[in-house]
Image (cartoon, rainbow, N blue to C red; front, side, top):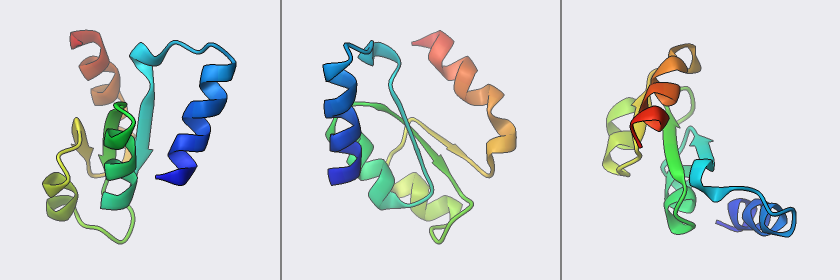
Length: 79
């Protein structure tokens, strides 16, 4: 949570647009941190947590790899 929160705080200082803030992570902790600060979350099953475990953290999208990045863009267009 702290890493994501620090990034969010820095982005606020720079007046970034949070409507399109995305946290991409490969652990449930990454996704939980992203949800904690109300970002769009993308879980990628390339780390220690498998696809099913990542789904349990309720990210906005779960991908097997970032090769499927176009799904992120499509989901953002639907928002």
